[in-house]
Image (tube, rainbow, N blue to C red; front, side, top):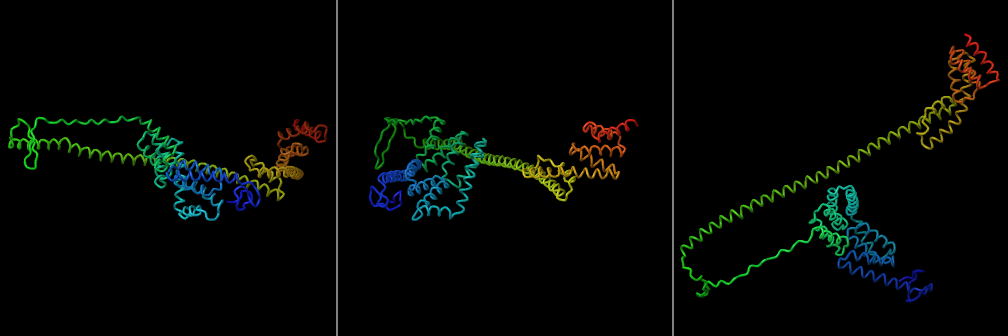
Length: 460
């Protein structure tokens, strides 16, 4: 035994020679842990697996490094069909004691059989699927699934318990009792199985015992017995020896009895046998129909799930495609900005739905729009003013109108927009824009010139 404080080998019963710590209580705890281990071992030997688990867990609670108790706990859980829990205990045991540990053998015996591990994995998935079927109320599917599980892992106690519970739910008490007996054959004191068995007895009710009436034999006093050689002959009193007549009567009676036996026993037995075979065939057919119906229901549920997943995938693909298109439009706007085509970049930015962009896309959009906006306004004003001076009034109207819509504080753009509309012959727009210049920029040369041109248009 090693010291819990310094890890040195202990030679004295009360304290450690190396670090001097008091180990009397520590030694006592180890003794109690070993006592619980021995108790668990005794219970496991008589197949009291539930009691063994309780004792072994108590042993590990006191001394978690008791590898003997942990290995035995893994074996008990493995016997009860909980392979994953067993492997967990053996791996922990191996970490606590790396050398000369039986856990190495147990782990190797499981891991060297890949088919066994795959079966365990499949069993866990199918058991979880059975629980899901129970939650959905699909008890037939759950029963079929559990039968498949128990055909590969016959010791899975929780599978037998759930199957018995489902049989009780469907009033199939005989099969429920059979499943519970399988549990108790493995674990004789399984609390859950015993509780289910008690509930099953209460559900079935107590069956009255059949009383066997024995016929009392009465001594026949109306006969005479005598010995002839080695034989004892009993002859009724007052009966004459009519052997010939009796033979004929006996033959007739025998024939009548044979016919009666044929009529009342053999023919009904044959009919009953035929009926029983027919019932068995009908039951087998019904079972096949039930299984196929359950399988069809399962397939329909899977198809519905796949349909929903397909619709969700199509929707996600559509959303991803839209986001990709928006990203491409944003890249086009950035390319125009890089080529110093500010109006073109701004026009592309205006066509993008900012809210549909990703967070990074929104940041790029805001940054690009802030840089492009001011430069685009100045560029549009220069283009429109140059077109006005060249008397290309249509191009001037287009550029200056965009400029003013982007920044309505551009008074010069508004004035030359009015002059361009005037020059293009669009009198209605020219009057509107001249009036805006007068209203928005009073007491300025632009307002004075606009008033003069407006008066001239209104006088025409």
